[in-house]
Image 1 (cartoon, rainbow, N blue to C red):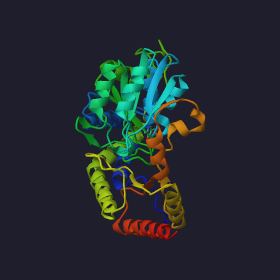
Image 2: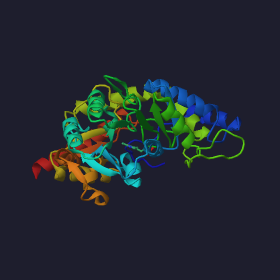
Image 3: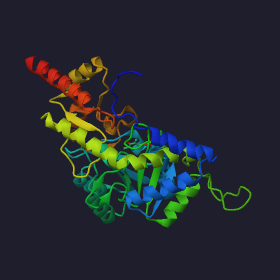
Image 4: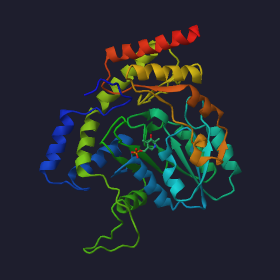
Length: 366
Ligand SMILES: *Cc1c(COP(=O)(O)O)cnc(C)c1O
C-alpha cells in the first residue's frame, strides 16, 4: 500500500465484506436479488421518496431520465456550468441544446440567472438539471418555483449529495426525479452504481423496466421499446447496504474533518447548512497561489484537485450558450479540493494544514 493521501478514497471494511459474501453465498450474482430490493427500499427512505431504482451508475440514472422524458434535439437543457461532465453528458448524446448557467459564490446554480435564461428560451421543451455541488444542496424551493413558472421539467443531480439535507428535506427529494451516484470516490460507494429517486410511479416503473432491456412481462422476450442494460448488480447492492449502515458515522467523521479545516482560519467555500462535506474546497488568493499549493501537495504525495472546470470552458462545448460564467471561472481559478476521505485522521489533517501554511508563507514572501 502506498502512503499517498487521496482526495476521497472508498471507506469499506469487514461489514461490506460480510454482506457481499452473504449475497455471494445466496447465488444472487445477478442484476436482481434481495439485496437490490432492500437497497432500493433503504434509498427511498433516505431520500423520503416513494421509489428508488438502483442502476449501474449516476450517469446511467441520468441517461434513463433523459430517455423517459424523450429528450432530443427539440429540447433545451439548462445546467450549472460548474459541475462534472456527467450532469449533461446524457442530454448531449441525445442532441439536446445545452445552455450553461453561472454559480453563486457559494458554488451552486445562480437561480436569478436561470430564471432569466428560461425567460429568453424560445423552445417549448425545457429541462433543468440542477446540481448539489460537493454535497451542498441547491435551493430546491426556488428551483421548483422557477420550473413551475417556466413550465420546465426539473430534475436534481444529487450525485454528490447522498446524506446531505436541505430545508425541504434530504438530498434526492427535489424535482420530478433525482439522481444519486455510488462511484468509488463518492461519499457512499458500491464501487460503481447510482439510483433514480422519484415519487412518480410511472417514472419509476419506466426507468426500472428500461434499465433491464424494457422486456414485457411475458415468458419470451417481448419488446414494445428498446431499453438498456443499466441495472445494479446484486453483489454491489450488498456493498451499498453496508455503506448505508455506516452513513451516520461517515457523515459525522466528514463533518469533524470539515471543522478541523475551518479551525485553520483558511478561506473555504461558505458553509451550507446540512452539507455532507463530500469534498472541502479551499479558496486560494489567486490562480498562482493555487498552482503553488498543487505543487506543494504533489511533492508531499497528497492528492488535491482544482474544482470542476466549468463546462463552458471545456473544448467540447466551445461556443455553447452560457449565462454569466465569471463566478464559476473565479472558483475554478482559486478553488482547491482538499483530501476529505472518511479515513483521514488528525495527523493527516495536521500534515495537510502544515503544507498549506508553508505554501502560503512562501507565497507571501514572493
Ligand atoms: C459523480 C457524478 C455524476 C456521475 O455519477 P457516476 O456514478 O460516476 O456515473 C454525475 N453528476 C455529478 C455532479 C457527479 O459528481
